[in-house]
Image (spheres, rainbow, N blue to C red):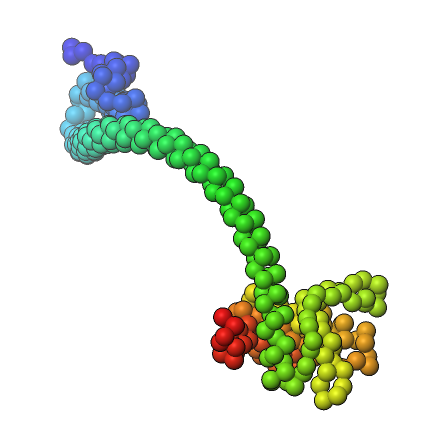
Length: 298
């Protein structure tokens, strides 16, 4: 009598060839087939027993036997069909396993590439840290150089400030000589001399004017107020004009002549002076006209 494998033995054999989920599925299928086979064999044994017991009625039961044989044939056909489906399922599982192996191989290759990339990044990080360290050293040197430059700039600003103050004083002094003859020729104003002076304002403060001089025009007394600047723009002109106008308001009966003498003037300065009614006189014009009329004084 042939020896049949138990369900446990079948499962153990499947587990040696397939993964656990696949082995479970195959064992379940084979168990179902075995159950059906055992049931069918039991039916066959029962039928044979019946045939032995009713041999005398063999003729009458022949038709039933043929019918039963047909049923068994159909059952066998169904069993063959199920077996075919099992074979197909096993074939698909093999294909899945093959694809799984390929996927694992691909993942291993990707892991190798990832590790290589991580190594490259680590090397790049090391180079970056070196560059950062060098950059920090450069920045420190630049800060030290900047500190020295700032110190030199402060010294230069102080020097320029002193030079600017000296230049401003020189401009006032030269203008005090050049302005009187220019006013007489162009504005018919005769002024004996010009000098710095202060005025008491209505609020109790004192306003300083670079050059102030008492003059005469057409027999009337005129007070000359002149501000001297190295350079002026529209904003500076408005500021000086406002200052001189405030001084003028403290002397409502006096005739006031207001002017600004500048070495350099921005185009906006002339427009502002014309708008505010204050004379804007280029220092170069005063200087050139004075020496053209007094060449022997050079």
